[in-house]
Each structure stands twice: as C-alpha cells, then as structure tokens.
Image (cartoon, rainbow, N blue to C red; front, side, top):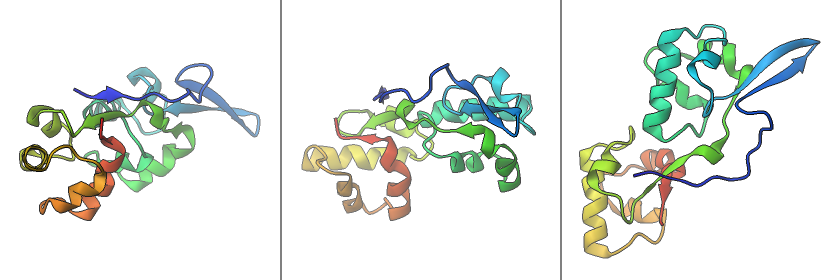
Length: 158
C-alpha cells in the first residue's frame, strides 16, 4: 500500500481558501484536498472533470504538479490556464510507493507503472537487494529517464 509522508500543512482553513484580488474574492483550492463540490466552483469544471480529477488524484497518490491535470482525457492547456490561478498543489499529501517492499500489485496500480515495470522493480530487488538510490532504476532497461523523472516524487526507499 501507499505510505503518506506528511509535512507541515501550508494552509490554515482547510482545502478552500479565499484569495483577494482587486476586491473580488477568488477560490484558492488545494487540488489534493478539494472535494467534488469545491471543484465544481472552478470555471469550466463540471461533474465529469471533477470526478476525473479526484479519481486520477487517488490513482496517482495525489498530485505533485498542476501539469498532471493535462494527463486527464481532453483536459487541455486552455482549461488549465482558466483555473490555474484558483488552484494549487500541496505536495505534503503525496503518497509514496515503497519500491523496497511493495508487491507487484501495489506497484502496477500506479498510473505511471504497468505490470512489466512493476515486475522489473521486484526482479531487480530480488537479484540485487534493496534499492539504495532512485538511480538504481536507471539500471533497469525498460525505465526511461523521463519515466524516472515522473516517478521520482512517488518513490520511497523505505
């Protein structure tokens, strides 16, 4: 299962804060804690996207970047630009995969990993012992540098 390493919370009144700009209150949502009702208040976000944002957040183990919203089906840069001033990402909520102990099933449940990647992680661990660095993933042929960069915030060596 995922582990959640929490840092000091950086918001004071929960997931929804008001940000005052030119005397007009604006939403300022943490995308990792906002519920669907809060997401519906964002311009261009209806029930479909609210549910997709939450489902993908759960699959990822929370967002590390607003750009990850672009990985959602038909969510484009225009839509992101419309809402980016009203949302933010608190990365202290990110759930990490434990590559030194998680099973294939847990590893492959992450959207960035398929069964082949998860199985390669397990096989390397069984053949070479515990991972001591994320650079060890570079020794596995099927892991591209770009995949390792995407995975880095989601990997724990614990």
